[in-house]
Image (tube, rainbow, N blue to C red; front, side, top):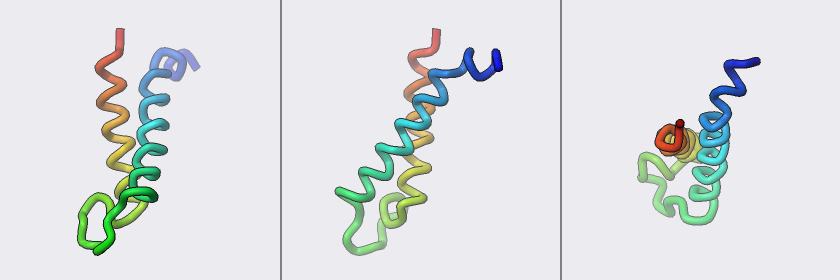
Length: 61
């Protein structure tokens, strides 16, 4: 439990990244279907989660 609490910024960043990645796919996406990241919701969400993790790591104390 202490491990989760000490890394809450990481989980928040990943969660927000997943949501933003899916929203990017839904509203912007790729019309032709040939884009590697934005052609599928899973790819876009996972990429967003990765970016969310990397950005949240910047704010670690």
